Image (cartoon, one colour):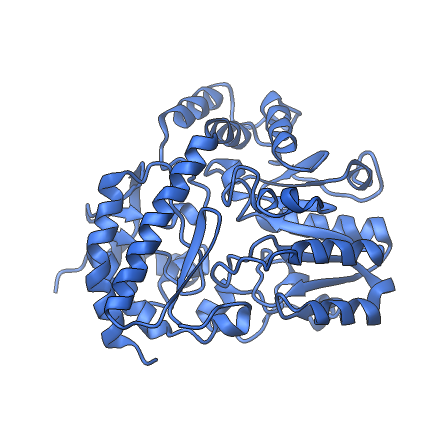
Length: 435
């Protein structure tokens, strides 16, 4: 049997890296087989170590809004690298990117960090510092990075790997965390009725994407904002995934802007870095004023606001105009309609859910409203579907608990490749399914 280049690389990686990967879902543990090692990417396409060309529906888990190696982003980054890669001082690109984030969203001030985990960790610390309280409310199935206090019932990564809890996290770290079922207004009201004076913040994914895409019910995020305000807690909307991806203004542009409310704090990541390690948290000026050096809540980062990452993010956002989002929505319409047709024809129970340009296909017939619903889906059927798509040149997220992503570079050729692969993949899912 011929050993593929990806398999050989995975063996090498496994000898020096736990599980052979640097982020767990990449290991294909949930779907079986060997992860593809990617050597290059252009537009909507990946090229693996064996020379296979694959349509990319992962898009680096969201950041590649414009597609891979967009020439204008590459040009901006190349020029920035030539000027130096890190200064340890304030820079022009970080000011310009901060102005862009403020212009697109309801935040008044923003602080840059290097990862979504740092953004949520810092937002929680800030909320505790502002309120003088310790407790945090979150929802099962929402992932906010690998912060100790927020790993309880944290969605896709843990669910994909079957991790039952949070090994390595002391009980004291999650002892101040209240975990509720997503969408359950009564549970939120009860938690605040019982613990309101101790709750510093409620944090939620603006539209959950880490148990698959579960759009909030109309008015739900407003309810959360109003409840927090009534009890003196801060409402933190995690838009690391949805920010500038669900729409030009993120999920807030789809609900908060329409309903007339704003979060106290928002976290950002992924798209705003243009494929580089960059993230941010921002909010009301009076809340952000508590951060050092202006206030007493300490937060710092050597590479925060890195000039290369902020240049990439700024170039990406400046190019991401209304026509880009219109194209993404049209492509998502085409792909999801075809997937529904193929799965229906094959008799596979399924459910397509979407928020803006983000969507998921759940292998269950019932609506997915929270994490318990997401866990009822047929993961064996998904695994068969995944490998059938991969064999036909389409790289999906290797987990049934993830969002799917398109880019502005997904042209007719890329979309047709996906459409052509769907019928056989649906048949494979039908043969493997247990529903």
